[in-house]
Length: 334
Length: 249
Image (cartoon, rainbow over all chains, first blue to last red; front, side, top):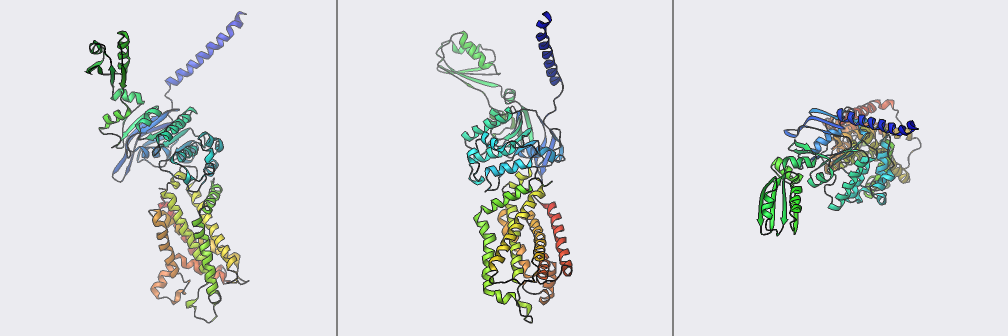
């Protein structure tokens, strides 16, 4: 009986230790990145489009190249896709060389190109059908169109689709071969905010299916909401790389809290909070500045501790937009 | 190897038929044109009196074939440049479709188009221009296919070089149609001044005309082996060159 009682536990332990070993192995061994880019350079005449850019994209993440138009994002991405050949440097995608192994790679990646078009009078289902016929293991096109909300447009000509519908069709074409990595170049440019949000949900859906997403965008809001990690590109060079939160903390650690309180001792108490650099007031409206992610927590702690009456509370956290401005000295919209 | 060729070809045919202007311009206009021409001159032009001066002689079937094939070539140049400018070629390139599969599909579409247009012209024009029973139609069709493929390869080269879709049609026409004047179709080459004769001999179309005319009048392929060789050479040269200079975007 004892043994029987023991059995489940032993198995449980064994499972736990196997899981731990797998975890440890995973943590110890450098996992092969899905995309590895090392010091690539690409010039057009005298213009250096991409200058010594290096980065890795990991499995299952949404990785974004961000920067203004003309920064070199698309050129970099098209080198990775095998559509352009960099003059220097090395690229590997899923362990393959994008130029040499182009045809082997095309079966395993999905591509959406910036400003691509299809034949004006091709029907949505015909385009999906053609694409499906090109790959070895296509997914069900009808279901894919359903998932992307294009079922009603199956028989519509490409030229009659709206901008958002065209982009959804291009996402469908990029997903038809059940790819391991999906490349999306300026996916939401020119779309209205509503269509943009819908597309973001679709991209998150791609990641949820265990695929890796590599995208470019010049919209900092998009990068911040969508990307697990981003690389900031400016004038063909990579400025920094990390999660949006990391980048913000690294380059713009300042936090500002606005509190409206009629507590007479408010200013004094705010000044006493560790990490606070500056407190200014305009009547009962206080502006508290400091650095570090926990400034807001501390201010809330202070308010709670002293049971201060608060009429209004607002925080200002820097965004990737501020990071970009700080790192490059110019706004991304310039 | 040619994965997707039939799907793409079939798709391009459907897309072509959906564009009314294209169908009217490429199929209907030539048919009407040659029927009208045949009605007006059919009797006089088609059957020249044996000792009439050859200077004014036009072989209507040859003219029709060549013009229809040239219009297919110009339409190929146009469509390739529209596809390039619109980013369609680029999008297709980022798939397992091989470059030559895409181009082959377009060539097949254009050849089919040429065949349909010619077939319609012959069928409708029969009344005004009866074809002699002894015309070797199968051999002529083969010669026409041979010539058209060769001229299509010139079209490729032009398509590889024209900068934008807006210029594709005018540039294509400006290069291709003037060749007709010196091709010996309207005037036999040896009646031209020596300079123009030399020039005429340098144009690929001259050999297409010579081959087509010869086959139509019942001469054998052997008699025109030289023409066929030149056309084959043009095809190889233009295909190789355009493979080198072709731009996808």
